Amino acid sequence: MKKVLSVLAFVFSVSANATVVSAFVWEAPTGHAPAMFENGMKAKAMHEAMGAGVFIGQGQRFRMYYVMRSDSAAARGAVMDTLSNSAEWQQFMGEAASREGASSLVEVYNMTLIAETEGGPGGEATVVFQYRPNPGAAQAVIASTLKAKQLHEKMGARVQILLDETGLVHYITQHESWAAQGAFEDEVNGGQNKEWDAFWEGVTSNPSAVLEDVIRITQVAVSTMPE
Image 1: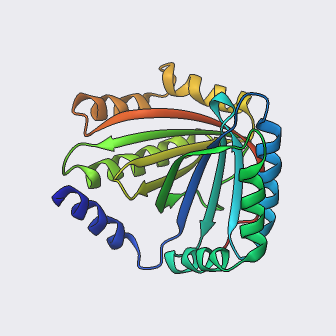
Image 2 (image 1 turned 45 degrees about the vertical axis):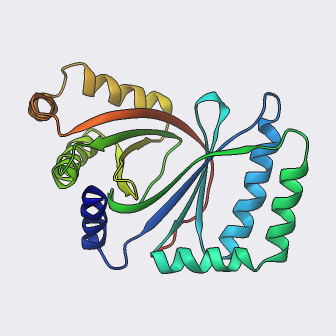
């Protein structure tokens, strides 16, 4: 409980009106991925009309990453209230769930934006690194990711750092293409950047987090995000 409270305290200390991001991970039975993405596009249009920015991406195992972004928790809550009272939305969800091969919601992440590259997110190729901080190390992990962000931006990456309600840190890099992402990865892992190598050696010599997962996502559609 103490760990949860410390994470919440850190989130609230970032900003009273911080940008919030909710990511919904959907999975379709074999052969039904096209219908899942078609439904995602329909939902995107409805959510945009309610004021949310939406990103849709295709991840590993053909999962759909449906990401909604609002400029505050209150704005996100207003979208949720609108959905609860929307007959159109309820009908859409009911029809989608009743069809053969209906998709399943396998994961939800509710996150607060800590930092991002100026101009916001963008790019076809997205890689998400999910780090679980050691007990009491959330602020140290955020500090390390902020330094990593500076170094990765010098190498051409767009970066987002988000913290979810469970304390999981989502460190995201984006590039205009997978070829560009691959060149970036070669620089990071190939000993080509001495500044990065020195930083990474310091981080890994006394790790403050555990890497839980790495997720690669290809952009399918994206709307203009709220300012």
